[in-house]
Length: 398
Ligand SMILES: CC(C)(COP(=O)(O)OP(=O)(O)OC[C@H]1O[C@@H](n2cnc3c(N)ncnc32)[C@H](O)[C@@H]1OP(=O)(O)O)[C@@H](O)C(=O)NCCC(=O)NCCS
Image (cartoon, rainbow, N blue to C red; front, side):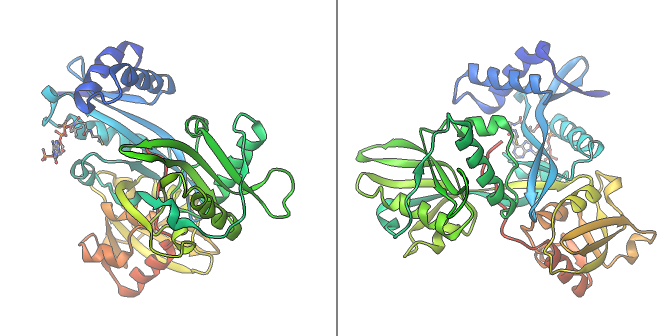
């Protein structure tokens, strides 16, 4: 049967809402589901697979930049893939996802990122776990450290909003794979009840080297409240210490603070004891799309010089196979097609090795251990050194 991949329109919405509700449930009500899908249609982000005149699968797909190695990499976001229970198990989810990745390659996007509800489907198409999103809890009284005070911010004021965004951009540039947030994501975060920031020492105007956006929550059977940190960033030792001291300063009336952050968490370096507790974490997945675009966009460690001949075993994307020559120097990388047989490459990568390698989540040697890569030890070590960096993390669920 021929299937058509297309953008869904307002006319498709009633069916899409029905499918989404049947697939994901309605923890926040059907109207919220409908509103979200309407926004996706208006954004041109809702896509579907039509078979015999009927849409059997839909999903959301849109571009977003993520910071890797201090540079922005154009990426694809995939979310909300849904097949109605009566249409499952016949390949609709797989077929839709294949179209989505072909589209990402046509658009010249470097990596495709998603939060999987199941790994198997996506792994079979070349995605692999490539970083974490982690939730932490800190008992406020454990955070009693000396630190500079924060200034109250007014997120209704354009200057304070701009200062928060600028601080985040500086923080995110050093923290793979944080998103270069769009206005809609910022609008959701700027909805926080409280905001504080730490002014840059000796800085002009309202420049910040740390900020924290906070809501208060009640805790069942506890008279104290919880600080829910909606977002935070720090770009200097004073700023980082100021954030921890800020939480410690709440210790009389707030029981704890919950926040996101990478593994390991930077706040642990300021806390006197091991009281920052990892409460949950989730692995998001990544897949290589246009590989020269991904390599050309991301930054590499400036001290690394490497040349590696590699081939990618990618059954879904013939264009990704190479063989390639990866050249890394002066903090930049280039992936150029190489006129050799795949057998002559120094390193062979499974399609699922590319995402975790390019985000820095896995070393080439770990991928060898899992049977996802093979090759010359020196070339594998060079690949590891070139792609290494802080553990990749995401702070915004999509
Ligand atoms: C996940 C979902 C999109 C799959 O759609 P589908 O059309 O049934 O998928 P396919 O027929 O293409 O199956 C592809 C693979 O997915 C995996 N898969 C599908 N349903 C699965 C399930 N319930 N549990 C575990 N794996 C499953 C299998 O590996 C399957 O391959 P196999 O049949 O060779 O074993 C569909 O079950 C769904 O809408 N679920 C609820 C929403 C959801 O979880 N979405 C994913 C968001 S990231």
